[in-house]
Image (cartoon, rainbow, N blue to C red; front, side, top):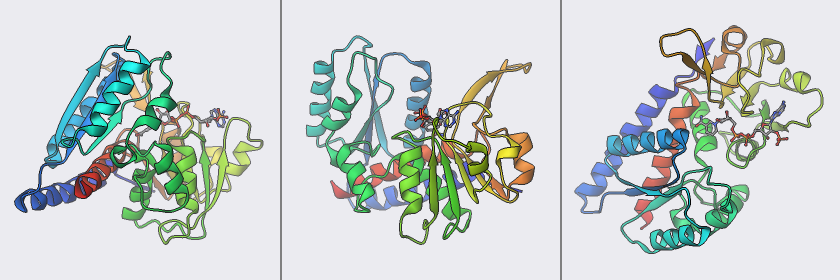
Length: 289
Ligand code: NDP
C-alpha cells in the first residue's frame, strides 16, 4: 500500500504557482487577487476561508475576505457580486457555500462573472467542462485528477466507481474521469443513495472515489484487493484524545488501507489539493485579465 500524500503534492504545486507569480510580477504584471465572500459565521466555512487566505499568502497572491452578515438579503448579496464582477482589481472570487437558507444559491452562482468564477460552479463553466472546452474546473475534482496524475496512477481503461453525485464533487469527477484523455479514459459508474448492490459495485472498482459525506462508510468488504482509494470525506468525530476529536474520511482507513494499492489519508489527502486547484484557477484568471 502506498499513501498518496496530498500535502506533499500540494506543496509542490504551490511552489510551481509561486514561481509563476514571481515571473509575472518581474514582468511588470499585477499580483493575482482572490476574494472570498463569506456570509454568516459558520465555523467550518470560516476555517476553509482562513486556509484559503493562508494558501494565497504562500504563493504570493493578494487575498481579501468580504465578511457579510448572516441576515444579508439576496438582493444585497447580488449587489456585492456585481461590484466584484466590475472590479478590475479582482481576478477571481468565490462565494463560500453553504449560504443561509433564505438565499437562492443557484441565483448567486449564476450571477458570478464566469471569467472570475474560480470555483468553477457557474453553469457556463460547468457546461464547458462537460463539453471539454477551456473553463475553470471545480476545485476538488481537479485536485483528485492532479493527485492521480502526479502519483503516476494509470487511469486508462480502469473501472472507476464514484460514490456520491453532488454538483461539486461526485458528478464533476465522474465526468472528468470518463473523458477521452490520457489522464482519464476510465469506465465510470456513478453511485448514490438509491444505488442497488452498492457493495458489489464498489468491490468491482479499480479506482474507488468516496464522496458520500458519511464517516467511515466504505469498509474493507467493499474494496477490491489492489484498488486505488480516494477519500474525499471530512468528518470530525469525538474520541479520547487530548483534543477530544479526530478527523476521519468516508473510508474506514485502518481496514481499507492494507487492501489498497494507493490510498489518500484524511486529513492530508484530497483536502490540500482542493485549495491548490483554487489557486491554479486564480492564476489562470489573472493571466487572462
Ligand atoms: P453531498 O452531501 O452533497 O453528497 C453526498 C452524496 O452521497 C449524494 O449524492 C448522496 O446520494 C450520496 N450518498 C449519501 N448516502 C449514501 C449511501 N448510503 N449510499 C450511497 N450514496 C450515498 O456531499 P459532498 O459531495 O458535498 O461532500 C461529500 C464529502 O466530501 C463530505 O464529507 C464533505 O465534507 C467532503 N468534502 C471534502 C472536500 C475536500 O476538499 N476534501 C471538498 C468538498 C466536500 P443522493 O444524491 O442520492 O442523496
